[in-house]
Image (cartoon, rainbow, N blue to C red; front, side, top):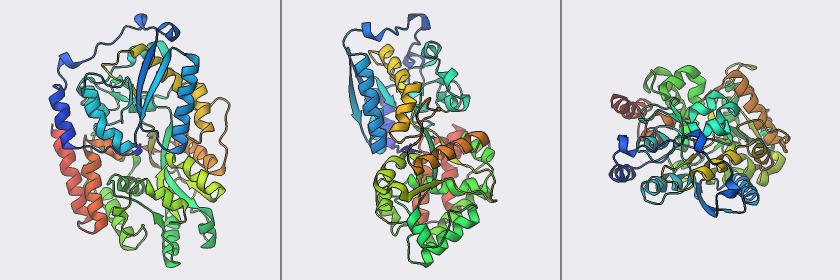
Length: 454
């Protein structure tokens, strides 16, 4: 999940072998007959008002407060502009969407527009199976690549055979940016006599101080497995060069058993043993962790910017946000992130031109203003609106710092089709004390190496 990794993380795709089996049975991935035909730019109809009465079915995972409000407003504005179009919205949690989307896309009447998570686990598989429509010809009409930086459109690009991510055709457009950072409770931090940490060593000292004074240092819920990837990734970015992390995720070199990655797993284990996380975190749902944090559990919360709107609503000015602090004060911070789940057109959509116009509408400059107004982080600079509330000011400033210093690393679950489980599962066992850091990384590497060999 820039997901739920969704995302949310992002933020991290939740995959199952059963779903993959159904996908394989539904169509033979990668065969020429499965590939949807690209529409010539000259034949694209942009006059949606004359498209006749259309019901556009849209599946999304924008269920949290600010995200839901954003989509409700954008959908209403689109329907107001085109009264002949009715949007049938199906909104599910990130996990539920990932579990059901494969079956829906393999059917005879899939949705028209879906949020298909980036990486090998979702988008690349759908492209390989011919389930998504390439958007390059629509891009020639609407100019998304002219509006978005190449680094962001690359995240939504896949080779036609589905074997490579970060290159190839465009298969989706994202509307929000994402950062995994550190929220903090200002009142609790002040009560501990601690300033917001400026260095990584300061941050670890703050964790120890919080624990020593009876506080839960980090609110954390890991029942879903993938949340541990965010905590691991934040630590990993302190120990491994950002280019090494990027190469590893994109299959361009390196191993999950390399020294910095094992050290990151060791640090995560050390934090567990020191009591820095919510007790029995593996039994707490991911979406419960920000709720618990807002109610006073935890001095810090490691999470994505998708939490911001709800946290601000419940905590107001008491919640702050910061990037994981660098080793040296004033240094360049690094963290995982990028952009929200991309909006894609399904290959069997009966209304692809209307779907493309919808995606263009929700990614327009005016839509970026709506993103700001609803407490989200727009993927592109909003033309007129500024963030309201300290935590949003923090987030916008963090996004600017990362953008200027090229400080974003990709979500780790992009690495293989089932890496959310292949890494998230061993990390969950590590947190439970049932495996060692090296063993956890060995298991992740086995999955990664098998995928690369194929």
